[in-house]
Amino acid sequence: MELNGVEIEDTYAEAFPIKIARVLITGATKRWAQVAATEATGFGTSVIMCPAEAGIERFASPSETPDGRPGVYVQICTFGYKALDEQLLERIGQCVLTAPTTAVFNGLPDAEKQFNIGFKLKFFADGTESETEIAGKKVFKIPIMEGDFLAEENIGGISGIAGGNFFIFGDSQMSALTAAEAAVDAIGELEGSITPFPGGIVASGSKSGANNYKFMKATANEKFCPSIKNTVEGTEIPADVNSVYEIVINGLDEESIKKAMKIGIEAAVTVPGIKKITAGNYGGKLGKYQFKLHELF
Image (cartoon, rainbow, N blue to C red; front, side, top):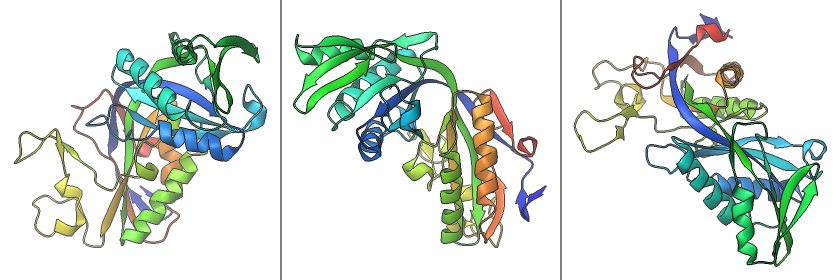
């Protein structure tokens, strides 16, 4: 199968269940909503070593936020709800409450699981907190030096999916990077998914475990490393490919992952120099979700 003259390999991306909370951060300006969202999702690339996977989902216009200000939806992802509760409190308390002009609202108000993060944050006010209502939502007002920090009582969480992915093979580093950037930009317009790596792009890639260093949880996926394609047995890198980037996608449900993969791949193959699109899997050993590339189209 080809798309815009680029081979789409007949394979699948393998993904696994994860717990996801969705938070709406608003600010007086788009800049400050984005600053707080960026801080709150930091050190959130992979649960291999990070305490959570996290990323910006999309921007929200003032017309769709409870307080009528610019907003940013973010997702925080962990393996369990206890860890998710802890990460929400720490990341919102340390990275959003401290940022100028911000407020926090529930991005999944209908989720069965609700974390009382706003209720916990109110104690920062040391007895000076109060309650108010914004757009029918119970909100705590926490006096701080600039004015009041506003936090909705609860933040919702659900069982979502992590690890949807596709690989972009380019004839040069810049062609592959340009395609990866185009893919991330396209996915960033969607609702329900995030790309939780630096700028949404994975430069390193990895495989589970190690061939030589058994103490490692994950190591370089040498069969996808172009610089050693001539020396590695069973390399997956064609002769005309000199750089590979991976786009990893987490999402609220299967449809969110599928849509993001499809839109991302369609954007990537418009860039000259892209030779192939494939995906990463472990033969079904990693997770129960399989996203077959050909079925996306």
